Length: 497
Image (cartoon, rainbow, N blue to C red):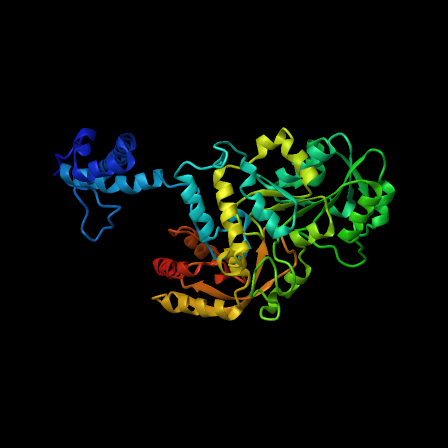
């Protein structure tokens, strides 16, 4: 055995049946690269072993009690087998996408870092149907010629909100910029000082306004602004009155903000259009009914009563008479990333004709996902089928039952200490600040891992599990875990054991 010096060639390795199978999966170039890297790694291990005392013996395979990672090959065939065994995980790591599905056990429903709103089955089905074939993105079947893409979602949006017209762009920041550029470039836009917000990613209303070419005209104070403040600020330079929803913070105490109807009255009196950046995209309106969402009742879900009572709705803004309102598609609406502009026909026509529209428009996949989601609202199925709404309406008792089932499925109770405790979920995504939904958490401690170590081990699973740490324990909130992920979650915990 001490004469073992030569490793198999790349060509010899490539002819092995298992390697040939990997070529079919990953391609010739990637497999050859992996073979070279694995061969070089083995060569380094052999050289290190040969440099140690008793080098002749070190080239022999180690005893069977040694770990596989430490065992060295004793023959050329052993070396070929070791290289062959090593290239598949190497290739898997090489081709592992950075954009991966995860299990969200954080309890944050619209989690910005985890892709915001998960799509409903109808939306993903529509994306698959449209994405794998040609489509009528810009083709008019009735006329037999070129059509316009922006009509695909407009009818559904107008039906659900009462708007006269609708335009879809790639996100709500783009929607706000486009509205300002089309309606107020070179002129003043009146905004309350208490609404000059910054949201995640450094999006600041004053900076977006500057980029659009509009001129900011601040009125009122941080905590108190009245309709009269807007009225006094109107001049011949005024192009627009803008209301911005404070979606990610609250102001409490000595505060005042005019009703949207009062702003609309000022705008009509002075001949100035009124726009609103509503942000959240809430299509739910009223305490008991909205947009066909039968059964979404505050008396049956008291934890949602503050949301149903206080969170402004798109239909409410349109009903108040605003000329233009902008919302997100991937927050409370529960659809894909999109910025949706709704309102009166004349300003929407001007927005649609603006040169920025081509740069900010969305593709067929977004339209497919958005129309698939909107159809669930139109047909009254959204409360059950749209994941964001379904997660919001889960009772603490139903979450606890699932958490207990997961805990019972963990096969080594000596390694884990599991406890069901009270906790709070949030809707997230820069919406409903201060609102906490009561939930029941599965709190975990591990016999050998710290809370940080256990949290990291969960992230290393496939699929990764994203949790949070509270009071030096890892907690899992099944409000944001899909029911068909419960078994995978239990398997992951057992893998850590």
